[in-house]
Image 1: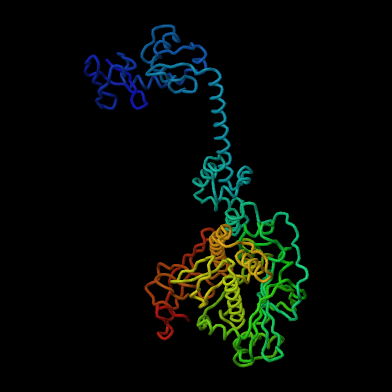
Image 2 (image 1 turned 90 degrees about the vertical axis):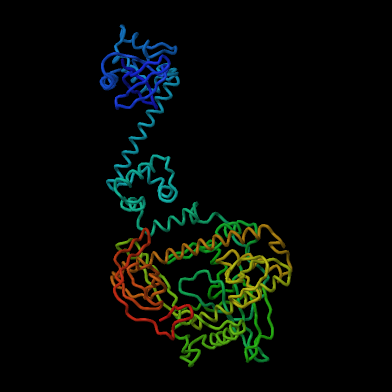
Length: 635
């Protein structure tokens, strides 16, 4: 005697070895012995054998029309054996009964299980809803398959094109478009980014990185909302100075300028003039909301996303040939460069020149300040400011230490097409700590320190940069900055570019004009702005570093550099000589830091922004006299 039973959701058949009334000892078709309760037995039969029964029943079940079975069965609950007898019109054999059981069990939409071997037909309304859902799934599966095939063939389905940013940077795996993309990635062996790049969804690898940043930080795009025009200040006194700025060629947000005016009693009056957008719109305005949301201008090679709309920048930038609203700090100095008096003013400042690095550095450099150099317009003013900067630097107790470091400048010509997409990159080199760098840096440090003290002594809160124990942080309380050697340091010199500086400028103006400050002491909004700025500024800086690395790889590919020279920084880590790219070289044997080595660049990946390089040879070891205490040499 044989039995049909259900175990773990599957139907099985076996031979009865022992019948103990309430239980059975059964050997299944695989030779395994099991103990069954009689209540778990669905059917007893004598023929065919257990293996034949299941094989024949499965074959016969395929021929049974589920829809017809649903139509002919009654509305009440039924046992499969009873329905089998009614369906066949005679006492069914084991195969007929088992085939009907298998068919009913395989159609849960049509027949609902009510117990072992018992079923009930689905109500018509529920059945129609279930069938509609099944058809929807079928159509979705067909759509997924179509999109998958299109992607594998190198074509971008329009359904996926509408979801491109989400598909790349925050995919919803429940969506059919994403399921199709994932399936196509498996079939093609490519990542989503590489597959979509191959399909033309991305114009270049640059778009992948730039669009990811926009997706994360500018989900609504970089366009500015409609804004009210700024209210230009009236009745400001006009300074009797001739101010000039010093910036690189790409700078449009000119925040700072300088003036040098002889004093009747000897010496000079040095003016540090900072653009004053805080005079044009107040806290709580639409423009404030825009700046508060962006918090800083975003910089990257070949592009930038400004904190303020261009028309606002153009209104307040310290452009040549204009009288510009500014917050000025004046230093009265003696012929010996001692500061005898300081005062701050809110005023209109005539800007007579916008000096650019590429024009000035060839004539104003170390040779100029040490050996006289050639004559040129602004030489007297620049030399005096450099002399003052040297005094200010010494007063902070911070000797110059960056003269042997290289700064790299990136520029991208977007009109030129390359094999890797639009844009031909140029990477320039200049020594850090040039006379022009020093004079600008020192005068800005002095202004930020002075205005930070002004806020502190006036009891007006500001946003300060502090450093102690090697850690830099922001705070609303004046605190020392050990790295700069100053008692306090409040960022105030870039209000067109950083929200922190704009906030501090509002506060400084309130002190100078005797008006209520934009942020009162212990302001929760001020604390929130500080926290948001710190996080956002760090993320912007990380993006800038990432894009500089990306363009370094583009430079390598653009110049077809196979062999490159590099300086060893530490174990397996080098910095290339021509560009600011730091990479790992696993094949490099142990080298002294500062050693120069030759490498072969074997692969560059613009999507993962990775470089694979192989060590070739050591070119030179560092001079022991140029190795610092940490063991790093600087060639």
